[in-house]
Image (cartoon, rainbow, N blue to C red; front, side, top):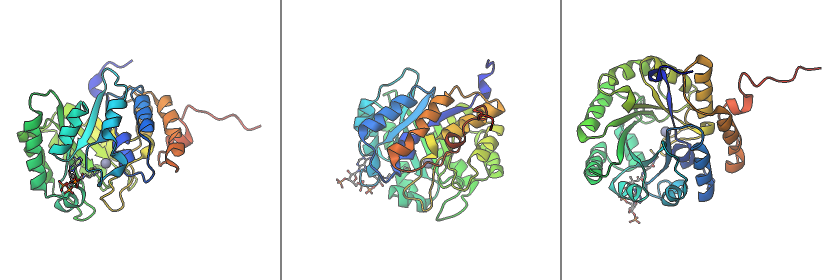
Length: 308
Ligand code: COA
Ligand code: ZN
């Protein structure tokens, strides 16, 4: 029985966006919709259901409109769309996304590779998006990709990240996501930066987005949680990655994260058996094994028959 929801950990499921954007095999629109509809029943309050970016940049998600129009929206679930520019905002609003996730990298080089524009041009686009969405009731979240390191530039100056957080807030973007695009963060760095950012952003508005590229994903979650963060992105099966970041690999795995929370006594409200069932259906959908561990090992309580 949970008594203190301030200690709960909120999981935002991002497999339909971060997970599928890098998949080489085309996933049919109806299969994307079916996946999101199942995830909507697993207890998530937020699902990143797709992106509205250039279909040439991310062909795997070119059917964003059909996906958003086809899903069965559950009450209490916020369906998020990632966007890079005003055109993305127009498409996302037409498709009735509940929240827009505006993405830019802290690293100029990665922003040029990923968004084909400078950070200044991205911020100008954000300004246009804020003006365009004013009065519509749509929520805005701003992600800072490569917060903890860039595959081209290396370590990112923490003061630059703090300054970008402030810039987002001044633009009128309330939610902030610190994203470790290629898994370069370590727990000490995470703890330090989260403590600093939480002086500017409330825990209810701050999301941490970790990739498990170097095996530190869940260590970083615990470090961020201990520092006061409460919201985390994760992808079913540990899918995911940015196609414009060399060496990118999967997000932290949702069912592994939910299992960690269950084992250490942090409430998530997520239906773990349903997640395991969904995760185990991914290899057939995608044509390859997925990185998540729990779907292979089972939970601690899934005991085996005693050998005879
Ligand atoms: N949705 C759909 N099409 C878009 C679009 C959007 N949000 N933004 C631009 N386009 C189209 C333009 O209409 C134009 O189409 P055309 O060639 O048929 O005329 C074409 O894309 C090029 O437009 P331009 O503004 O010159 O964009 P660009 O080629 O400089 O690319 C981005 C800029 C931001 C659109 C592109 O780099 C992008 O979508 N990046 C996102 C990458 C991503 O999702 N990464 C992973 C998530 S972090
Ligand atoms: Zn990511």
